Length: 196
Image (cartoon, rainbow, N blue to C red):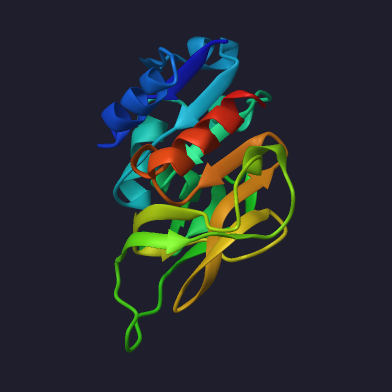
């Protein structure tokens, strides 16, 4: 197994790397398209806003190499949002490997934005990525934008309205929450991803 973390400048890179190390996996941090293409598994971490995230990927000449990947790919937090076609955040065109548009979470009475803290996952359809997840699955979220529930949704979450918490389209997967901060559930999901 050869796991790489795409070095797109996200502040969660170190914590994702540490979570993988706890699973016995030494993940290399790289911007090298050839190294990324040769990996068995690719993880795109990210924290922050869509426009700067895409700007970093473009500056590193990684947009087309990421779109061309055929091995299992996992986007985490902003990394998941960047897999979609577009984000309403600064009207940003994204990687476009998962259909749909990421939108701002609507504030409402009792609905705080950003959505921050533990929340329940609601499984939508079976997939190997969700193996051994019980009905009481809680993950740790920090985000203000979210992808809609659609054909790619494996698990959703409710915060004012339903949104996609885990997605899968072809070889591309995403987790809106932080698996590296989601205790045993996050470790299980990362193990499941590495088994794909």
